Length: 632
Image (cartoon, rainbow, N blue to C red):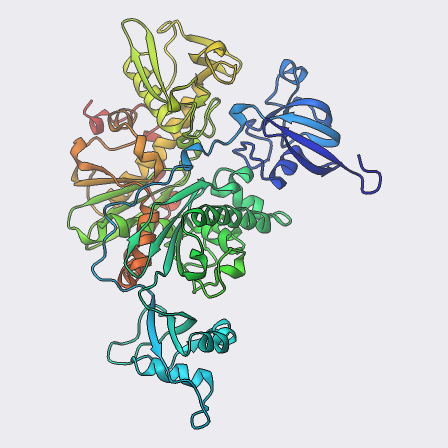
């Protein structure tokens, strides 16, 4: 300990990261400050028990609490959110408490659907050829540039101060032969009048030199970015990472709560900005100096994530009457937010429909082309805040379902995200009363991810181990036992798990899944019936988001998550939020279409919609109290 400043060192293993701390700080706070992630579904409120760490050396102020047994405590386990530092200490973060971003390290290919009718981005470039000044013509530099732009039909342009400051040097370095980058604020001016825009920068000619745009998907769990050459509409592979805000809560509600405390808002903004800056650094490894030629960013995220990205207080999003501060965002200078990009870069953020149907869904509908087709379509983005859209080219209704974190492994005793070590596949043999596991990465299991949870419950339900009420059937399997949280099914014993602990599925886990799937299904029903239709009238079901890529449709229908429709009506479209943002990046017309999509959506607040709670209660069985909905 330093006598002068009363600080000491906390060491985190296995990464051997050392962080200076002060007495009274929680181990979670110290880890967050050093960008060490420890799982915490509740955002450090002490009500989830997932932030368990092992004290190897030193002492902290802590007690067992609700989530640690006396034996666990005696063996050194502590909750990081409740343990307070009081001197030098060393902690080991167990594998089940760590975030694994392995699945983000490999860039994803560009989707085949990234096509636009014409190359009309919001930023365009023009070659300017001007006569250098002399004694006979000593007009100011800006007048000379303005005249050259007017010669190409561009009049009444605003000019960035940064462009003016650099203008004298770039003009003379290039002998007054330069490239002008102009941003046109959508909607574009009336075609009968000269277009209106803003001169962002002057740079070295020729015009055919590459210039870039960047699309961003700001997700609750992950952040993805994609670089596009706006000169040719060449789309490069996307790169992503965990949203480092997850250390402060795994759902939007916990982050809104955290943002309202002290400097919580600043911390959350700093975390997501840091995540994006880390991804920009990765891009630079493949595309050196792209930042100086990056002029436009389009970003899509749910309503809360968009506010946290910009640093706007989101607390009213969760308070009735659920009014977000901003629905349609003005153009923003991302460098002002702390993004490591040039000052001339402009950012456009997709507009939100409501507090819980955000720009990511507007972007997703744009990508899905739901708004262009006549078929009655259900669009689903399954997550902690599941969003749904029902409609076609003529009309659209939308709603958000508070599904909770079960689909992403939260609220589940041995739950985890879809990362190496997660049980994803499960096959049960009723005759032999045995099961087979499929683990991501093909190693030993650590826990269960969301898609794995669905597969396990569906298989055990079919096999007679789980009843329609979501309870274990006593005597149905030798792997059933009474645990500390009630009845549980043993998926993998400690000696066959990576964490050295039994991997189990409890009845409480099943209840959480039933609540989550029920929130989604009752949402579909409410929207469909609100327009005088039934589930059988759905002609297409589009599933978006990372969760859908590993979803077993038969099993999802079996437990009542998806409607009982022919499998050929289902389509998975991946990260539709990033796809839509990329389309809008390449085409002003696509951006304007997104604004039209938003204006056509009728939002339903399900909690205040008559009949919703009755429908929700009817879903609290497997698959549903009305078996006819599932051919039973």
